[in-house]
Length: 435
Image (tube, helix red, strand yellow):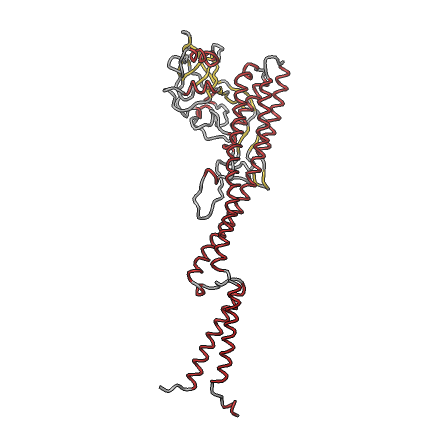
């Protein structure tokens, strides 16, 4: 087979082009990356894309985590201030004793009212223009206090011994920590277990159950009540809204029981007081990876009104009402109103217990938020480490080995120059060269 000069020229040009292309590819890698298109290295390029996605997610999650920590720090600062206000209310409720005059009691109630107002103001804390305790309605001011007064039912908050005594029994439909206070037509005070409908006398609630414990009875039993009325789980909502304000049906409530052979008509006891309303929602927002599953224990960045204010007998799961999101604030306002009436007896027992319960609610909310904040703070360190690892993987798979590249470029340049030199010698001269 005869090889013509044209064939030699074409083959030489193809080889020269490939040599130039190799040199061009090496020159392209001088920007620090050896991967510019999938054809450079399909396997390595696939890894490079995956690592870049992971790095992008990691960077976004780091930003989210920093924002979350900032949000929770502001929330925690507000809760600390609220807790301080509630702690002072507990102290003031302890001062409201029989030794005080009516004027003293009113002065103490005014001091406590100012503290509740300050706590409500702290609960409206903001980060920028967003309210930290409004749930997902974070552009809406969460808490507002009325200037008018409303008729709110009075709850009997059980202390630790009473809670254990009244819950360790077979006839309870659930856990109870409060009872509703009733007025009897005989002038006495009674307490209603809203889960069972059983009515207990004030004497039994104050001292009678202690005598039962001393005699070896570990929990409330049939016969301890002075009577029973028709009351089922969820019936509280028939008579009170979720903030404890009594409605028309509640005011008309008038069942009767027989006490010592006499008929006693009962009605709900209530107090005129100001009311705090929660205007946010009960939702949380999370900061999770785009490809990660949500973990409510750690991903709930915010605390809403229900989280910080807890619930009372008027809006707990047994009441039939939706959570108000302002229970502990309204409980403290009940303490304020009762103190203003000069009821030192109530303040020395129920008042102190109710104020302590409100303080414990806020304290628990702060502890829960602090625990989540620690999780996010630890995540920041972990994400930084992950970022370094992912960046290292990208460097390994895509970065150029500078020393190796320099040698290969010199080799390619030498080969290319030699190709040009050899070509100039072996390609037949053209007619133009001859002439």
